[in-house]
Image (cartoon, rainbow, N blue to C red; front, side, top):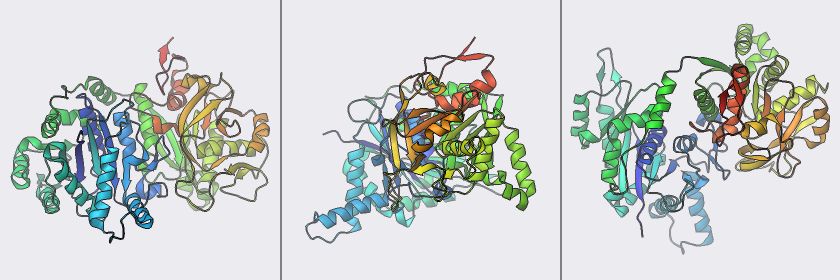
Amino acid sequence: MVIPKYVVITGGVVSGLGKGVTASSIGVLLQSCGLRITSIKIDPYLNTDAGTMSPFEHGEVFVLDDGGEVDLDLGNYERFLDLKLTAHNNITTGKIYQSVIQKERRGDYLGKTVQVVPHITDAIRNWIESVSSIPVDGKPGPPHLCVIELGGTVGDIESMPFIEALRQLSFSVGKENFCLIHVSLVPVIGVVGEQKTKPTQHSVRELRALGLTPDLLACRSAQPLMDSVKVKLSEFCHVPVANILNIHDVPNIWHVPLLLRKQNAHEAIIKQLDLASKATPPELKAWAEMAENYDNLTNSVKIALVGKYTGLTDSYLSVVKALLHACSALSYRPSIEWIAASDLEDECAKISPETHAAAWETLKGCSCILVPGGFGDRGVPGMILAAKHARENNIPYLGICLGMQISVIEIARSVLGMEDADSEEFNQKTPHRVIMFMPEVSKTHMGSTMRLGCRRTLFRRPGSLTSKLYGNPEYVDERHRHRYEVNPEFVSELEKSGLEFVGCDESQNRMEIIELPGHPYYIGVQFHPEFKSRPRKPSALFLGNFFHVKYFANKFRISMTPFVHSVTLNIT
């Protein structure tokens, strides 16, 4: 039997050090050595998944092909490594305890007292060992290794069972199959500018007290570490100087794999895991070009992101990354203007006229508008005003999920004269319920009850702009996350206004894509195209919306031969 090999990433001192980016970057580096990778994210919270968490508290909920609602770090893994992960690649305390309790209720433990050790820790180990052997790169056979990120900070009480399970795992598989990388902070205190090692020393001591000794240290800092600091860390943390990696601040996160390669991180990991016979020298030429090209971009484009959760940019992380991918592909930097939808509303003009005026000035100064997904009625009037502004002033517009529903409501009100047109989510009593609750969705339970995962959308009009952008006249497969839809009873009436429903689900009853003929670019989609955007495979809709029409209409034409989710733009 082939024993899986593991690279485990833990974090210390403070949260938010970038363990997810570190794990993804290590995956990219090892992938460039010809090794096949899979990833697991461990989240010690009690929630079963991220689906019911507030974006303000935990950032965006990332959706996978199988409908898993997971931590945003899995989005980083998919984008960096171009993988297709599943819900099983995200382990939570809730999932582990739920599985153990279900076994106890069935009598699987034969009357034994069920305890954290061994039953919870065994469940964690079994989960890791099972998932680590499943390929996620579309190729047959198990991966060479699994990169595991343990969320939170070493010492947190909720992560203790996972630390113990990882300790047991390291002992059972042996040192040649287990490599532990500890991410820590080396801060600079005071005007002297001295890099302090004490926080990292204490963090490593805490980790070793729990039975795990790091093989490599990944030290986060603002500036490159001094050699004397590395020597000191080596002496007090029992890690060779060559294995002390420095991840200092870089112009963009695409530089992190290059930074790790420069410090020969791949050699240390490959040596630790005895993979020299399977690995090749790292090939990151295309990746380096991508990172350097972005650094050299001088032109930018202003994009208005009108949303509900603009107070925390991680709430729209995948949208931001999709904009970055599209901009970079067209040699532009995205300049995102974060506009709280509620600031555009008439009510805001009464309470805070300066805020209201500034929001509208910002919106009018942008070259394109995006309204992303969200739940609840807060900010909806402002989103409707933004959609109306885009429609009436021929400004490129992309509405995603709620953003598409907002467009339908706005056109019903402004064009068809249905002044009380609304969504059932916001007003259950309106006679013009143009957006309705999906009949098959639970009204009593929140978690995992939406229409989730990758679904096929059929094009009702093969010659539509959206079908051309995707380069497929028949269908497109994208990820969904919603519990409301366009009311089929209003479709024919809405189309009389000039709005076209150009895409639907396989039942042909649920509308999925809208376009507005005669407008330079006005598209709304019920799905989330941002979840499948990749650095070298940007989303077709992001490319089309924000850059083709507005900036390249006179210089470029759309080629009908796209690569995956992108379009090829050729100079005419």
